[in-house]
Length: 345
Ligand code: TXA
Ligand code: MG
Image (cartoon, rainbow, N blue to C red):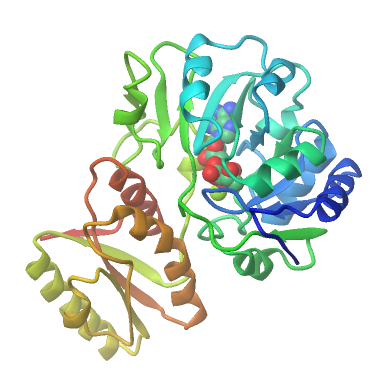
């Protein structure tokens, strides 16, 4: 594992990382959202290796990471005007755009689709690495398929040890949930995965923005447009249930459910907030931060879900959070982690 300071990126390490990618190997790297598992996006063998290392179904496409706008020309057939507008405002940053792919991008990278997801991350280490590796890095989140995404290099090591050539350690990530994905390939731009860049922020640049109907519910017959969103995901090993309602009610229900689980011999965990922490009773109680600060909650979420695993927790109850703005991204991940198991008070 190579430790790097984002303010002073070591060029020798970058050169080494670049060489590994050019030779068809894999390197994990930090971004502002979560750690990515990088390979050469234009090399079909590298993409196959990424799927194998993650244990990921091969119909679930990868995101191509670039370090400069000019790189778009090689990988998409036409650049929609919305892409240009969005890039000016949000790149580098936590926004992924779906456009039509060119022949340079192998189907192994796009999971067989004629479209490609592209993003320019806002992280000095990521940008230097992409540059050193030739400009096109295919990277999913660097977790074993189905597990919470890594927000620390240690998480990557836990999941990927021995399966990849190098891990670049840039410390804890800043945002903690994956990028917003916007589809620009047909009609109204559509959010396929919510993230730090909210619909409201996109509407400052675009006239119209839709959201995929499957984002916050499982009771539709439609398949999500981002293939990855159909899988149970971001999930700890313990059985997770969300509880929605007034804070006092939620505390009562959670404590009651936990008491029942304890009687069955389960090791219990609660994911709560600073406001309710003192009232919660379980073997392991963890606060994600203040209810007022959804950015802090997002930053801590995956780490806490992994800690429940590390501590052998078998049953977890969690508070719910606001579904407005960036809160929608947090709730989208929690709902998937819980397999949509929700108690509404
Ligand atoms: O923040 C992020 O986006 C992180 C960091 C590493 O950049 N990456 C990430 O990648 O979250 P991954 O592979 O875990 O999630 C990519 C998502 C999947 O849900 C996938 O189905 C969707 O993007 N996706 C990729 N290409 C697509 C395409 N052409 N059409 C629709 N969805 C696509
Ligand atoms: Mg992922």
